[in-house]
Each structure stands twice: as C-alpha cells, then as structure tokens.
Length: 509
Ligand code: GLC
Ligand code: CA
Image (cartoon, rainbow, N blue to C red; front, side):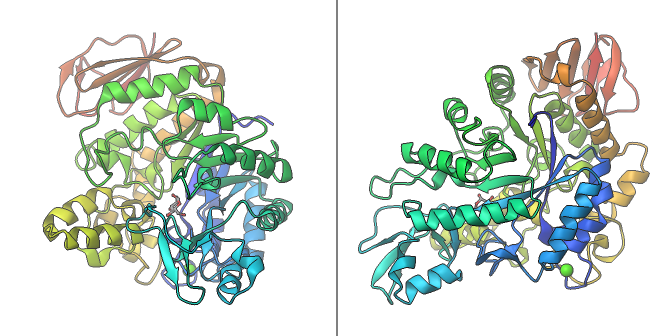
C-alpha cells in the first residue's frame, strides 16, 4: 500500500456541524459536509473519538469502544458515514485511545467492585509513586473501595490500562479488528507510545517494552494494510525510524514544530525561531526514511496562524504562507478543520467560556500560586486547546451555521468575517489556495519527495526544492526582492519588487 503524499483532514466532531439542534456536532453533520472536505483534495478523514464517553476529556475518555456516543448519532450513522465517504473516495480514520479508558468503562467498574480479572486490566498499586499527570497534579488516585491507588496519566477519570495483561491486549485487538471489519481504513493512535510505561522506574514513553507491544499490536490487527499514525510527542528522529515500519506504524506525530515556541511549559511562549524551525523541517524532509506526518493544526494546539503569524490584518496571507511552507514538505499533511479557511484563535479572556479540563487545571494551579487572573487568562487565551475546539464557522448567520442553538462551546465572535461561505465567495479565498497547493502536491509528487534547503534572513525564510524557490515573510516588515522566475504561488494579488507583510511567493526558476 502506498501511504505517501496523502491529505488527512481532522474533524473534531463536537464542533464540526450540528444537525439535530442540540448545539453539538454530529455524524450527520459530517456526512452533510463530505463534499466540502473532499473538494479540498482530502484522502482521509480522521475523526476525534466518537465512542461512548462521559466527555470529561471530550471523548478521549472512552466508556465503550463498540458504541457510538448518542450525542453524535448511532452505529448505523457511522457505517453510513463510512459508506458515503467511500463513495467519494475518502477513507475514514478512527481515533483509538488505547492507553486508558474512562473510569465509567465497564471494565473499570468491575475492577472497583472487586473483580480480580478486571483489576488486572488497570494499574493498581498499594502505594503511589512520584508520577505526575500530564494534565497537572498527582497521577495516582486513591480508591477507598479497594484501598488501592490507580494510575491516571491524564484526568482522574482516565484510568491507565495495563498492557502487561494479555487478556486486556486480546480484548483490544478484537475491538480494533471489529472496526476494521466495519470498513475503517486507518487509525490515529492516541498517546500510543505510553502503553509500555514502567511506573516503578517512572519511564513512561517509548520504553523498550513499548516497541515489543507495538509489534504485537501491529501483527494482531492492522499490520501494514492500513494507514496508522501514532501520537508520540517529542519522539526523536531515531525513535521514529525504529517504530515506523511495516511492523509498527506508518507514521507518527513528533510535534517538534508544534511545540517550537513553548518555553519551559507550553503556557509560556517565546518567539518563533526560524532557524530552528527550518533546521527541523529540513532534517525530517531530507533524511527521514519513513513517511513524515506534518501537522498544521489539531485539537490540542492553538491555531498556528495566531501563534506564529498575524491573525488580524494579514490573516489570509498568514494562512496561505503556512500551507505554502508545509505544502512543499515530503510526506503527509494533516489539516485541522477550519485551518483551510484561516480560522483563528478564539481569544477568550473569561475562564467561564472554557471547557477544556487541562485549561481548568492550569487555571486552578495558578490561582493556588497566587498568580493574578489577568496574567493567567492572557496565557490561556493564547495557548488553550479550546482555541481550536470552538465550533466551525460555516456562514454569518446565528451560531455561524454550525447550529441553530447556543453551541456547547462559545462561538468565536469574529465568525461574521471568517466563515466558509464568505471565504469561498472571496477572490482571495484561503480554501482555494489550499486546494491549489494540494493539487500541486498530487501532480508533482516527484518534486515533493525531493530534498529541501532553507536559508533565513531576519524574518524572511527562503526555501528551495528542485527548481522551486519560496520566499516567506514572517513579519510585517517590507523589503526589496528580485523576481526569480515564473510565479507559481503568491498570497498577494500580484508580485512586485517589494516583499510585503506576510507575503509569500514561490517561483519556478
Ligand atoms: C491526546 C489527545 C488529547 C487527550 C490526551 C489524553 O493527547 O490528543 O486530546 O487529552 O491524549 O487522551
Ligand atoms: Ca447534534
């Protein structure tokens, strides 16, 4: 199977399109928009989890792997979605959360009620260790019923599964094969590199045991037949080589560029370093043997155009600059809903408008430390995951055509200007620019697979791939340029002797 040079469109189902008027996106809403997604040039759609869940972490806390959460529809709707997608030559990629389940999962409930079989499925200890949860605070929670502690690397309602238990592994494999039989053609594996964790030594990600478990998972389920992508924050180049092969995963998200402006913690941001960015893009583009998974945005990060560029006066230019840069990289592109019309951060400064558990944990932690609300909210407004989770902006009617009632998460106030309908009508549509870049990638896969070189000069980034030269201005400073040949892409109406704010041009020399 050739999994290279694909476009994967990520849908955050809760915020994509509501069709039954409950303010929550649903599967019928996705079906309604399949043509819109396909027309972009998409090959796969990846849906963030839609299985039954109490939604403490928006579906990443699954309580039943086999049943679609009623808020999204039912299993028949999902099968219809797969069928409708297939008709359009779109494949459906499912989000698999295998590191933990919700504490409302039947397995966990049975464990709590004293069933030894199911206690083996989770990680229980008489005494906690030093481990901290990714979402802040202690990773162990005391359970009075058993007089034991259970591990939760994320929220306390997300109990970590014990991958050393063979019976558990077999249940997981059976479930994955069930979905493959239902027509799912790809998987995104949530924090998969944590399944081999060693709580005694505190080694969590990518332990030697992880690689063994991954190989078994692969053999027993998807093998090398389906496109699989693992969520592996910070994976090194060498680790990626080791786990992405026919006996592991197709590819992984390392997120080195996503986190490039994080200071010590993500809540503290520093300016974008173009030299560091281009060095990492070049390394993975040029030397990596596997298929890169480039992520322009996702449900765990703020909108990149707001973070790196200008989401106000030069919003469209900025959105186009980003897709131009990533559009020339070798591998697959993951496009997050709304990026294709240049959606921005939500810029919300009132904690009441937030939903995300991680954001609240941070907020409460800062409050305890005596940090002022203003300081904390200024950071949350820039970094919170809810920035990308706000409802999709389809048009300028009430609730942006996402729903006809107040949505589960506050709409972005600027939706009257930034929405799909308006973008598609505009001469300088971001969506159509995305389309052109994607078309170019598909038609010139030989060029896309070439090596790339970068050069920086202040806020200007230059790249060269084959006979294509890109000039990208990451600031509003104006400088002189010499046209270098035929203009292949430009985010302004014309090309002059000046490089204007956030202008990007690709020449064929
Ligand atoms: C992944 C998901 C994130 C979730 C976490 C725990 O990082 O992308 O949304 O909170 O795993 O499942
Ligand atoms: Ca709905």
